[in-house]
Structure formats: structure tokens, C-alpha cells
Image 1 (tube, rainbow, N blue to C red):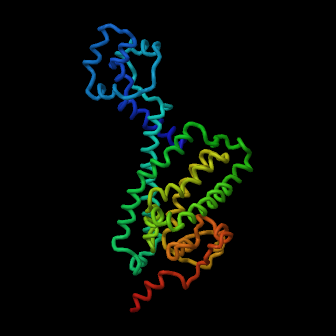
Image 2: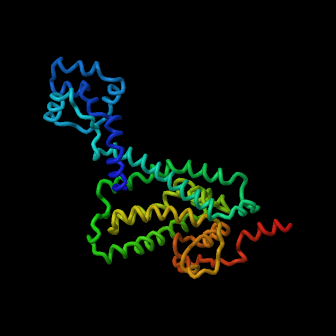
Image 3: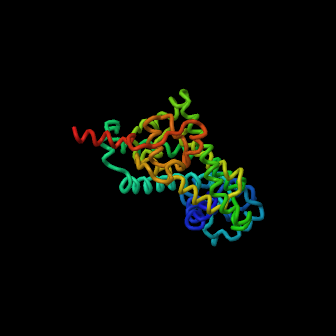
Length: 334
């Protein structure tokens, strides 16, 4: 996320903060004026300032040294448009990360879910007897309600990453090219195994009732149901993705790419597809496996692979006779 934040600062946010929280606004602050023991010749600046500047002047901001303030006052009439909140100011980072995360998850959700719904999801499934009335609208509504709380819960991870506490790195050969390539399956295996257990624990009756049950409201999910869950549920299943980079080194661009692809995969496996018999079926936890999870609840907890379910005794093999589309076809015959 620090990469995204830097790009956003370069392209847009530096200008936004320069207008929203301009440094010039704090030259009218009584606290600043008193600290400099300035004379009346500086006071007209306050009277000529806008109402917004006067409001902004009461906001917290990083302290400026006496020398810096004196320098600013000496050039007050030609002060460049810069923000009083520099890039490393934590309140600015938190505000920026909140907006970036909310905008980003909405874009990813609506882009990938819309494409999957249009081109991959079998719309005949909407005639399934267990498909809810207005379900797509309800899935979207539930997702939109979850996003702000999930963002709030996730912010400490992103903030710690921006402050340099993670093991993200920039150079392609920092840990060697072998590790660069090996870190991809390591990331997938680590997060898959962790999510397996988080997901399985979410099915403990007491936890399931209060946190995970809303997601299983969608017996026949659409791609829009991928993020339609209790916000704590969504956050807990995302923790392994954030935790990984505080334990293992990972290239910064590679992490961002994997993070986007993870969101795509989460949407992809919610298309209620039951294509069976392909060569990856016994290794990859695809849409057919996750469809069975929504139908039977206590099987196929994994995210990408089937190995954790096999080891944990919760694996169920997708078979053509389990396809919920058969119930739709039977209704058509009747």
C-alpha cells in the first residue's frame, strides 16, 4: 500500500492537501503569531484570509521550528502552495489510506464482479429455488455496508506497512531471483493454509451464528456475493494476506499484484459454476469446490488449493450429479 500511496501523492494528493490544508493558513494562527512574537505588520494576513483558511488554522499539524516559521513569514506574500501536512504526517497518511482503500475496493469489486457476472456466471442459476428474491441487490448492499468497517479494521496493517515495519522490498535481486519467484508459491501456500483455519474456525457454531452466517445466506451465490459478509468476517479472512509481509520478505510490486489477483480469485470462485472433470480439479479449490461449500457448509474451506481440506478431512470432490443447475433444469421440465 505504500507504493500506491506514493503514486497517489505524486499524481494527486500533494495538490489536494495543498488546497485543503495549505501551509499559509497556519500563518494566521494566534499560536504561531505569539510564538514568533510578531508585530502588527503581519496581522493583515489574517484579515485577508478566507473563512476556510481560518477554519483550517485550528487543525493539528506538525510543529515548525522558529527558524522555519520566521522564513515563511519573511516570504509570506510569495508563499508557494504547499500543505501543512507533509507526506510523513500520520493523520494525513491515515486519511489518504482510508480514501485509497475505499476507492480501491469499490473499483475492484464492481469491475471484477460485473465482468464475472456478465461473462462467467450462468444466469439460469437465478431461477434456482434457493436463490433469494432480489439477491443481487442484497449482495451488493451487504458488500457496500461491510467495506467501511473492513477498511477501518485494516488501516493499522496498512499504516504499519507505510511506516516501514513490513518486509516489503524494492530491488528485484535483493534476496536473489530464486527467492523472488519462490515467494509467489510461498505467499499462496501460507495464506491458503491460514485462511483454511480462519474459515474453519468461523464455522464454530457460536462464531458462525454471529459472524459468518450472513455470508452463507447466499446458498447460490453470484460474483457480487464474494464480499457480501459481516465486516469482521471479511477482515479476519484478510489477515493472512497482511500478516505475510511482516514475516516474509516480498517484492513490493509483486505484493500489490498478488493482492489484486486475490480479490479477483475471491470473486471468481463465487460464480456457482460446477464444471467438473478438469485436470486441476483435485489440486485447485475452484468455483465448483466453493459452490459445494455454500451448499453443504462444512466442506472445502480452502481458498486456492485442496490440500488443507484433504489433510483436515473436510474435502469434498465436485461431481456432476451435485451440480445445483440440475435442479433448475428439473424445474424447466416440470
